[in-house]
Image (cartoon, rainbow over all chains, first blue to last red):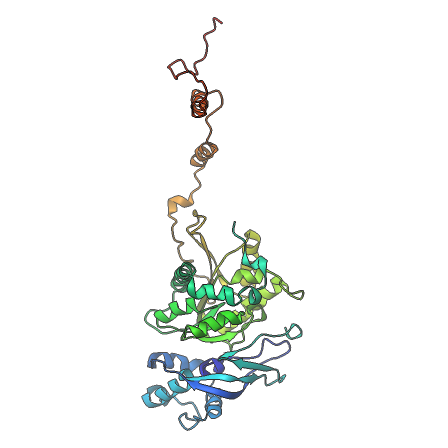
Length: 124
Length: 275
């Protein structure tokens, strides 16, 4: 799972959960893949991202020094930061770990890089 | 008609490792999937030359995702079958994968995606595979959560195999209830094999539906006369006691090696009134 996907995932499908965001990310195994740097795509992605979660995920994988804590409009014009964002969001791959719902504590395991968001009968 | 996989088993069980392997090795399946994904992408009408974030619902082994990659889009795929997703991992697709059930809702934040496609997946939602499943409710839940995770002005295109007209009605009703506009585009409606159903849903107001393929304005008019002629020909047999009928009978007897009078200008003629 890439951290861009993590930024979008919620647990609001569980019955009774209102926001279900951000999920608590625990990483036990991570990898790096290479992806082509596309500044236009990152720019298009920026308004959709929740910045606090971007920073949160950077902390989890130990890249918080690359990413400014607060979102500002300069980021769009700063190629260096865009490049680092690209690395954080699209090149870091979480292979094993878990996501935890902030409201119910329900754990969604991540296996082979695929988060399992399937729910049980009593949760839908 | 071929057996429908929905009747065999639930999707997470039907698409086991054996079935999933077909989607990486069977070139016929691959060709059809890719062709439908290309058409779905065309119907999505994304802005040109802009990389978009697309949701692929029922992405399976990522065949449709590869089409999105070829067009420079990023995608996130969701599927209920772990075996299919494992094939996608083996194929090293660029998109990110999530294991999930579309009937349980889309687990994404509002306004995430610029569009959604789904190839041959929607019909699975029409079945109740577990005793607590209610197809109408699951469809509505699916469409309403999908609506919220799409950006405004985004489209969602579903290629699917409806079993009957009731299923089409159930699906379109629930999608409209969830707030979508749009409708069904049927490509090649006159061909039983090439005929394909695409549900084109729009979030931002009613726009004109795209044209279907393999259908001209003339074809759309009902031509009853031609139909009547065709029905007659389709029966394949000439009118009884007619000259053609008699000639066909004689021909058949000859083929059977039976003694048959030759064909002449008198064959099949009415007798005059003297007898």
